[in-house]
Length: 425
Image (tube, rainbow, N blue to C red):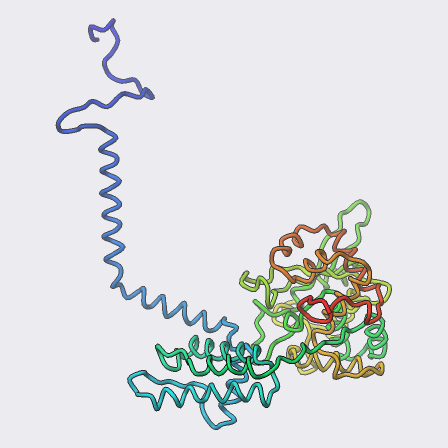
């Protein structure tokens, strides 16, 4: 006991005691700060010592390999044309040189790119702006996969030539794509047999692409692209919405559950990965809701696809959603041929249509039904910021939008735009 009223001089548990100053220990706060400094210094020394660790180089090689395998550069049209161009010349698309090799090697490689750009404009009849884009894609893909053609040399003569071409060659008007009209698509689909594997795949692809405002590359493979269950549409990406019965809530179920329980679905959902906006998001994160209308019936077309072109449930995730009789996935070229075949079957000029004609037609039908542009942009994934709004849409809003597209016929002059990128005519 101390002389301070019988109370102990020892601090009670839970009571803060002011630090005592001394020559050896000025303040406890200073001690903690010094400890933090020592720890930070030790961590810094450890991190700097790791700069020579072999695991960093090994990790870089591994990440690069994954990046090359998952890169979409190989599917870029500029890289595809560059490979075709060089092989037609009897040369390898992979060209390498060094600044130290002298001007002969550098100018020879740059000469290929000069000739490539002129070939695109004069022979392929692409716009100068597009040729510039293809040149950049070819150069970027070459750098990603094989390294720069000539390190430290950015092809200045090609860039100067492109500026000269822009001054001399007038840009032609943008080629218009004809929209597939709802009533024409209905008539053409009615002509297809319902017991053919090829026909039911074509029917479902056209109906889903139109009502879901899908780009051709979102429901099929681009040239040179390999099918991947992580990025490409598969049978496992489709689910159906059951009707609420007996007080039970509606639920999304697989096709097998639809068959087993005898469900008559009211909607379908396809999970997909955008090929343009928001493709940086991993996996298939975008739901495309489909509803039957008075003209088109995408839900019934999907059910018909699953029933005629049957696949074991355990193979759903390894089976392309839309495939040919051989089992190969639809490609963008094949989708274009399907659209042209359908339009030709109802007496329309097939050369006026392409894979994007389905997407343009669906958006035109929505515009003809007085759906707001903001809603169409969101549902069609035309802009990344309104995509966030799309994710918050209620199922009721999605049903209204889906049934409107599938129920509205229109004439060409009612279409407010004629291009895939929602450009007004």
